[in-house]
Image (cartoon, rainbow, N blue to C red; front, side, top):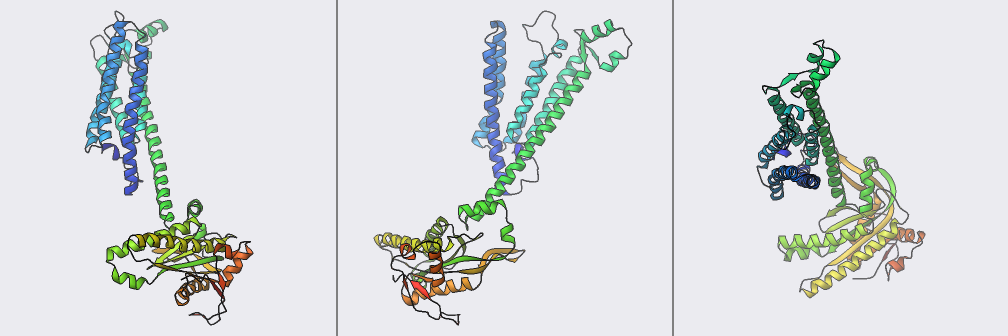
Length: 454
């Protein structure tokens, strides 16, 4: 589209370009309704005049309103190739306004001349027309409107200046004739004098107004670009972080750039028997199953202000305490695991009702210190957590299959929950402590708790 061709450096991203095109179409709609409202207000004023004058005014206002109808309809229909049509109708607008503002009406005072019309404030209506183009949200459209306005008005003034009875002069020419004050004033006020100096001022006004309006619209587009970019970033972050963490990260990313050691809770959850399930499903059905499984768990993690680190096959890794640690991190982690298990239980009831095989979940949790931050190189950075805390949480999740339970939590996490003033048995009824046990990858025995459910 014509109004999409303003080449500011911010329009490369498809999402931004689409947003600008949408705003420009909306801008044409705003311009049309602004035109209709303005014409309506002027029509009310015209009705207060004598009928021989109001009739002409109303006809002019109706024609001006109709000139904006075609661009409005094309914007509503999102018509392709509308640019040249919009440009043409803007040219017609400028020509029509210049003609109406310069040529005397048929009811004018006897002896009134086009030269006298140029001395009135009629020119300001053309400036108002230009100002309205800022609603288009297109720098190119503003520049074009300024150009055709200046060209149409200049053409009208030069037409008047070249009439046989016209006396076209600049202020310098009049003052340079060394006439007395009386003759100089009479020269300026003559009904046949056309001031080319006034035209220069008027063109300068249109040029300056065009420049200022263009910069204003361009600046607005930059703001939109930043807003779209920020929203895109927030949407990307929202895939992994809870909404309150997204807001924190959107204000500044310094916390992510420098890896740091901090206490946090790590939760691993996966689908028990996934290998056997995958053998019975088609690839499409398997992907659908994983998406619903992951979607349920991620939604619960976000509801508890957890950060989804990654999906590993059928498993999900969530941590609590990133990017900033909170006192209730272990409480939220244990509550999240309990809600995940309950949610899968409700989902299994739905699956059984549809004749589908239920799925089982296993969750492992641990609380301790870990390295948090962006890991990788400049080509690919991944926000993650590393350390023994992560490894032990993963091993505890594996232990759920060996014990035939749905939840295994380290004693460190359970004690941290109690230190927060919460009761682990309230969060997970039936939670019981096991004797220390050696898990894969660790030399020292680990004390843990399980829910005893299978």
